[in-house]
Length: 388
Image (cartoon, rainbow, N blue to C red):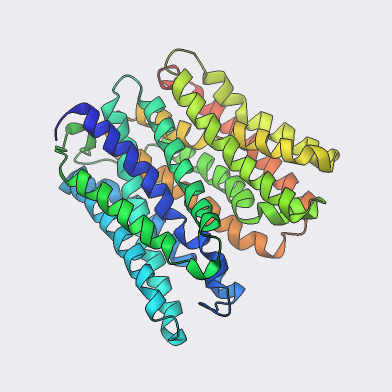
């Protein structure tokens, strides 16, 4: 298959399944901590994601050089195989669940496989999507990231649909089959090693790209706060378990909706100033929550915070791709790694501060104001109008 339409369908489908695969372990959290199943302690379950973050960072930083050497198809194939192996072996653990001594080390290895596969795939898919839409690179990346986000919400939904936690094995089993089918279709594609993926013979990271990196580290801190501790923070604000879960779902729903709308409308509308002021709007919403912690308004505020955060990360990748066309894969890997660095830092720091809601909100407000200032600084003599 060499038609452009087939490439577009399969690339965006792979983005969705990469998102699904990425959260299979968090989605199975109730099974992993169930004493009658895997029996992991809370600390063991938390430690499970250390190799994932490390492997994502390493694979995101390494992927540009691998793509430059082998081309996008080989790197994507390796990434997909790592994720397929991870879910396949995870499914087989139902037969060895009584051998508790081996479970945790095996799970650590599988999580590392998932993280490495995710890093290789998403770093390659961002510029691949951009290369398929030469005149709408940012829109392509925003819609691709929307599909990744849609995928991340699908695995927990699958866990809810199967009902009984003892049926956990159907989740990795279904994902294994679906990703294997997508992988087979992907193998039929012809993806040449185009100039879009080639790196200059000698290059160094431009100072401007380092500023993008700092911006996304700060963004990762904010997204990681809500992603890892959102439910706890909302419960501290006076919400019950159901409202806290609803607030967190609306946060991720807001992020996904913004990316979709930005991807659709930035083709014809100048959304650059909305993008630049989004962090300031988020800071204002957080300040409102800090000053007026009204239980009835928190759920709506969570949706709005997610909505105005949605375009910051993929929009920065799209902008960076337009700004540094000869380093498109480096931009993707570098900023994906930055997001994981921010998430990793905040996840470790917030463990002891998760009950200090006011301090957390104050920190996030500062992060958002700094992001806004950095974006406006980056705007000078830039190609932002081409990106949005």
